[in-house]
Image (cartoon, rainbow, N blue to C red):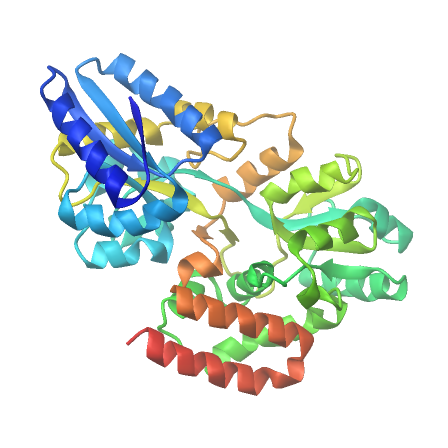
Amino acid sequence: MVRYAKGAVALTAALLLSTAAVAQDKRVLKYNADYDPIPLAAMEALIADFEAANPDIDVELNNFDHEGYKTAIRNFLTADAPDLANWYAGNRMAPFVAAGQFMDVTDVWEANNLGEQLGSAKASMTIDGKQWGIPYTYYQWGIYYNRDAYKAAGLEAPDGGVTWEQFLANCEALKGAGIDCITTGTKALWPGAGIFDYLSLRTNGYEWHMDLTAGKIAWTDESVRKVFAEFAKIQPYITANHAAIDWQDAAALLVQGKAANYVMGNFAVGVFKEGGMTNDNLGFMVFPEITPGIPRAEEAPTDTIHIPAGAQNVDDAKKFLAFVASADAQTKLNAAIGQLPTNKNSTVAADDPFISAGFESLSSAYALAQFFDRDAPAEMAKAGMEGFQEFMVKPENLDAILERLESVRQRVYQ
């Protein structure tokens, strides 16, 4: 059954309803979540399948709005924990793990061979060598490009990917043709973080990037300057007024052929196609390798389910996690919401080239980053994204930007 909750008042109501359910014969599994309507319907269908296979278990899904959930989780994990709770992978789950509020579910991973099936997401679910939840959906980031823009510049489209050197050479040719090599809209800051994250992952690797967002590396360190040295190579080819436009405005530039490449998430495909692009002129490739030999990590914001430390029905909660982690369950859920399953043995729609490319990209990745504003604490994320935007406008300010970010790091991670 599904209950709709909003904030602490609604949580209280849900708890009262849950108490009534305990009187029934079935074992109750309390699940707090924050689904939008379409994912909610998909999860309801999945819960129905689970209950049909386990007729002695009744899953009570208490669904919050997103903003209410962010506040509520900090209360219900300590006051009256459910048996299951939605959250996010990577550094976003770290504070709850450090506070002892999420349960170690390494045994679920080991008993169901999830280390192999969910291999690309394992690093983002692991802290201190243990797994703390189950990933059930994600979506890819990468470079979306306009084949017509490449053709207008006399270039071959980068189908199948290009080297970093070829990408930079293409940028110069595109600039000569009056076409922005890279477009973005950083008015809302976050799109610029996608560019920085890939430069970071490709220059210094996944572990270094996660250490940076975890506050373990000084922003004034020479390794950070290596990332910005690569950033400087593409800065002249980025849409000049990016700081004044939103990401949808930049999408329009790609659609119109005024820009050739866009570092973006797969959710933008619908906007590109609404603008008139088709599978014939819209392409996708993974971000090029920069430092040879560094394992390929990808940007893939991942949604997860956890067992709170205060859960009462742990055995059934682990049974539910194993069910959601399975290839069949993830195939069904993600087909309904238009995203990607984290289980590599799942299947995706073969007639959607972007879903197929994303599934291949993420399933074979070494590890997954969650995005700068998920991997770093909120204050550090905001300061970082402001710094990335400033660098794209005034690269000569790099020293001042890094000094400012280091000052924020020393305050935020105390």
